[in-house]
Amino acid sequence: MLEAPKKVAVLVSGGGTNLQAILDAASRGEIPHGEIALVAGSKEGIFALERAHKANVPTRVIKRKDYETPEAFSEGLIGILKEFAIDYVVLAGYLTVLPKQVIKAYPNRILNIHPSLIPSFCGDGFYGLKVHEAALQRGVKVTGATVHFVDEGTDTGPILLQKAVEILPGDTPEVLQKRVMEEAEWKLLPKAIELVTSGQL
View 1 (cartoon, one colour):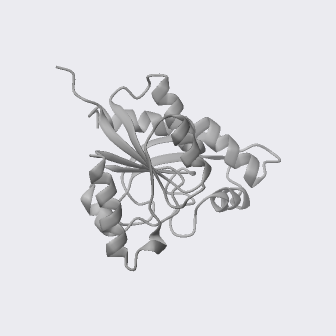
View 2: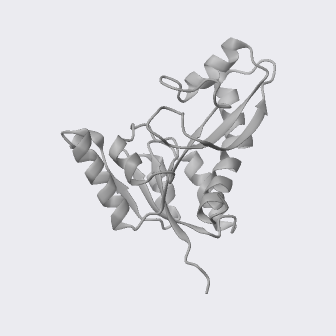
View 3: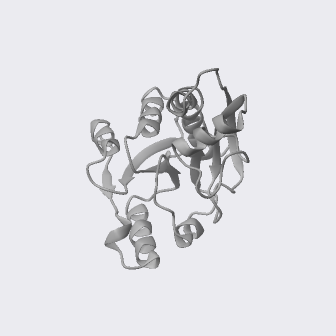
């Protein structure tokens, strides 16, 4: 008997370009062991939720500020994940810090993408364009992206996949960010989801 695909939730906070890469890969049959079963946004009105609607993926919005304590927020988020029988959680440009209770509820089942080759340019304060600004300021010739499991530290969990991206003369943080997305992030995320949902890891 064929095993049912593992259910995957993608957590988002913005435009959802990484989410789109996952949805596109899924539609091409590149994530046969995983089903994108839920897209949860940290606020209303973000374009990532539109992308989910277009792909007929159920959505929920769960805002940290609607809950008085991190514990209450954790319970709310875990409740939603359980409602959809989620096996794996993917953070795709999700800008809310995941409470420890959520991480403990899904040990080694939460994936994050970071736009550098960890351990370079990662940890507290390194997110979005700041990562690329730091890489350019340091003068490194190669950057990239990393998919890792989420633990209770910032960008400290076990690394699954990495892909290097060349830094070119004249790169701005914005140009570099786009290249890292196109050449690394959008390729690594679907591959990582298939790796974990197929039980290869």
